[in-house]
Amino acid sequence: MELIDGKKVAEEIKKEIARQTAEIIDSEKPAPHLAAILVGNDPASESYVASKEKACRAVGFTSSVYRLPENVTEQQLLETVDFLNNDDEVHGFLVQLPLPPHIDPNRVIERINPAKDVDGFHPVNVGRLALGLPSLVPATPAGIMLLLEKYGIETEGKHCVVLGRSNIVGAPVSVLMSRKANPGNCTVTICHSKTENIAEITRQADILIAAIGQPEFVTGDMVKNGVVVIDVGINRVEDSSEKGYRMTGDVDFKTVSPKASYITPVPGGVGPMTIVSLLLNILKAYRGEVK
Image (cartoon, rainbow, N blue to C red; front, side):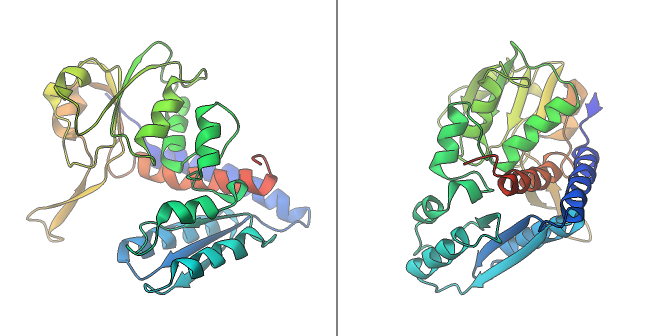
């Protein structure tokens, strides 16, 4: 069993991004600029945005946060999106989700200029991804593909089982794993909450991508020997430690890792790759690689 060290891979990629950013600045051009819109004061959202700001600073990007109150109207939020769409000094931006219940997230996402949509959630980017055209790809699926590539994991002709069908991870990663590319060229099965006999399907997986949002859902009896396991989940589980909790993935690492050829840990696996993939999207948007 070999651990897939997402933290190490992410650090290597960030060094390359920092090098490219230094070249941009040395040529007297503005640094790539990420803006984030944060509605309300949800602690998790605050933490996510702070980590993105920190990552931007680490590679030399400019970052800014537009903070709006919890009771902001949908129209006011859309006007902020329009402002950033039209600001040439902002190369990419995101609206931190979730939004308050009175705001339709789909309407907000659809308002973002697809060329600045560094989350990769706009229907234009989703459609271009499905068609195999250049696009801004959601960061977590993009990070998974980078890990498979960096570790030289063979995917062609393999059976990839994806647990979860969300628009953020499950659906896009299933497209990426099935399309004509390397990594890719997999036969993909998507399992979800309505799938019957999930364990029978997961035991057929050469590559298992778990993004189902249930702590330690995948156990050792649900996988075959030699499986490659990508654990996207990050769940807080209560325990008797000083902190009162521990972080765990959607995979029971203790029982699954002895059977795996490769496996991502939680934390330190997919998580760091999500942030670095966002940075790569900002660089793509800065260079106008996606229209």
